[in-house]
Length: 323
Image 1 (spheres, rainbow, N blue to C red):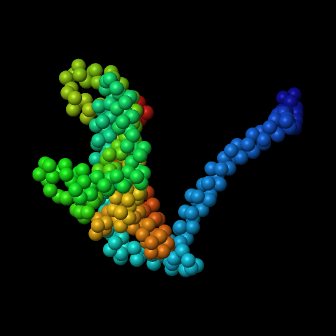
Image 2 (image 1 turned 90 degrees about the vertical axis):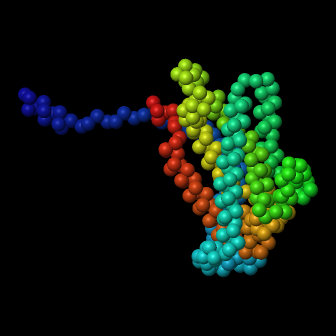
Image 3 (image 1 turned 60 degrees about the vertical axis):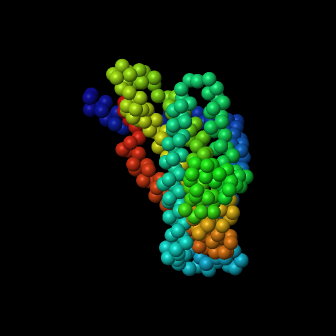
C-alpha cells in the first residue's frame, strides 16, 4: 500500500505554476506615455550634454593627439603635444603660478569663511543683513567688471597704493609689480568667501548645543571646545568646502586675465594655467597643444581630488560611522 502511494506521488505531474494576471493594455499604454513624457522633458538636458559637454570633450581628446591650428585639418602626431608640454618653460611657469595661487588662496579663503561663519552663528541683531552683505561678493566677484575695478584699486597711485604709503609701506601698485600682482588675485578670491561661509554656517547650525554645555561643565575653554567639538562635527562640511574651492582655484581665468590687462603678466607673474591654455589655443592657434593642456589639467584635478578623498578617512568624522 505504501509503495503504491509513493509510486503515485512520484508519477503525478507537478502542479502548474500559478499564472499571474497581466497588466491591462490601458495601464501599459499609460506607462509608455509617461516614459515618453519624461524623455521629452529630459531631452533639452540630454541634447545640451551631448552637444556642449560630451561632444566637445571627445573632440578635444582627439585634438590632443594631433597638430591642429583651427584652419587646416588635424594631423595625428601621437604624444608629441604632451612631450612638448614638459619641455616648455612657459608651461612650467604656468604650473608654478597656479600651484602657488591654489596653495595660498584656498586656505586663506576657507579660514576667513569659517571665522565669519563662527561670528554669524551667534544670535545678534541684524544677523540677516550681515549674512547677505558677506555673501554678496560671491555673486559679483567673478564678473569682468569687478576685475576692472580690482585692477584700478591695485594700480599705481590708487587706493591701495595710497593707503599702504600712508602707513609707510612704499611698494607701489601691485598690478605692475611682478612680485605682488599674484597676491592681488589672492585678495580677490579671498574677498569672495561668501559661498563657503554659508556652507560653514549651515554646518555649525547642526552641531548640538548639548555638547558645548557638557564641555563647559567639564571646564573646557573656547579653543578646546572649538578643537574637540566644532571641528570634528563640521569636518564633512569642511571637506566639501576644501574639495570645491580647490577645484575652483585650479580653474581661475577671468580675474587673472582682466587684472593683468589680458597679458597674464607682467613677466608672466599671473600666467595661470588656463590663461596660458587660452593663449596657445586662441592667440597662437595651437588647438592641439591647448587640448593636451586641458586634459593634463583634468588629470591633475582628478589626482588632487583622489588624494583628498583618500585623506578624508583620517580627519573627516561622519555621524553614521560613529554609531
